[in-house]
Length: 276
Image (tube, rainbow, N blue to C red):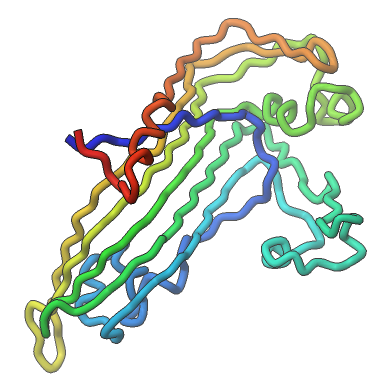
């Protein structure tokens, strides 16, 4: 029996500290006859008529991030964040960006907030022909995701600004009140991470001057790294001091994978999957 590696994921509920970004992972890399091993994750038959005879991918990383709690308003473009090429006037002494809180604007519309983060890492993959009509590919991949939904706007404001009065959330037209009970309805937090080793086969089944029929198959072996969730039908909360919050009437359930089994498969050299 295939033994999944599990690892405990500690979910820290610090919400909405990023930017608002919603994009397609691997945009421009997964379509066309030159997509190589990137295309087979959408369609295994994409390598059937690849323009490459051999294709090797060393490493790739795609990130998808979305939230509706904060809007990005920084003078630094996202590609500048990634490359560290921002203006020297926006740098601290250590060379990192001198982040200002007003670079993120709270989206105060009275609606519940949600957060989603997905990371897709494509490891070494190799495509090669096994006959004149069939190509094969050996692929490795790791995927991780975190979703948070059903967070009320007051709770999102406390999470982002903190409980102390210096943050300014107790003043202004959209202020929250200390020692006032706020209700949060149905909510959930889900986190998961896993790896996969896959083998893809694809070939041209039929072809004429105008049309072509291709077919493909992918077989995957999945190794779980860990998963966790927290969910509930609701609770009441209030800020009682600069360092204290009170939660009442809570209906919360949680679960996580055991972290002890994560070590066992690495005790054997070059062991990708451990069999009982």
